Image (cartoon, rainbow, N blue to C red; front, side, top):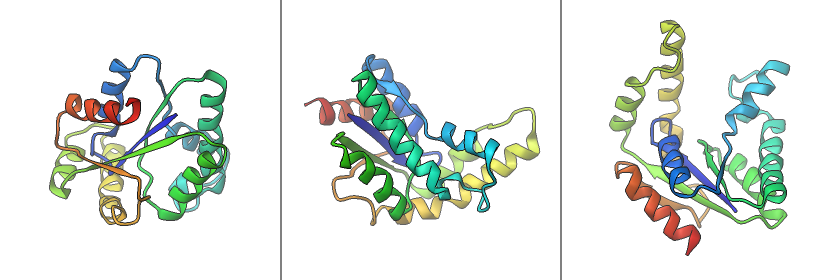
Amino acid sequence: MIVWVNGAFGSGKTTLVEELRGRWTEALVFDPEVVGYVLREIVEVPTGDFQDLRLWRRQVAEFLVGLVEEYRRPVLVPMTLVNPAYVAEVFGAVGAVGVPLHHFFLKVPEDVLVARIDGRSFTPDDPEQDERVRRWCKERIAASVAAVDTLPTDTVFLDGESSPAELAELVLRRVTG
């Protein structure tokens, strides 16, 4: 099975997945950003967002299916994916081969997201790049907030201001029965 943890930048996706991984030791963690980073080394990304590359979406779906099929272990995915067409494409490709996908979305107020993003350092040795990344993350908050109404009907919404331990407990109860 796949457990996709979605939400805006700063919502706590990675923190929740780390908490889940500590409790669910057989689970693998796959961050689809690595596919994007590889693609950026090979091809131009005209929009600056590798999710706009059809190949990124296809490769993410294939990678996830491959991990589940080859290793027969649950896969935890911390990734913001809010474009409705992209969600349908990736989740549809996974579902088409019968791999169960549980989708969770962390809801966090915009002011809290901004504060969390401002409190992070992405590239400590390059303050200018750090600020560019922060700005890019904040520019995408509105799309994440708006996506709440377009996500699949089986999406489970979580209060992203709850503790990681509380959230992990909720997720585990939901996916493991």
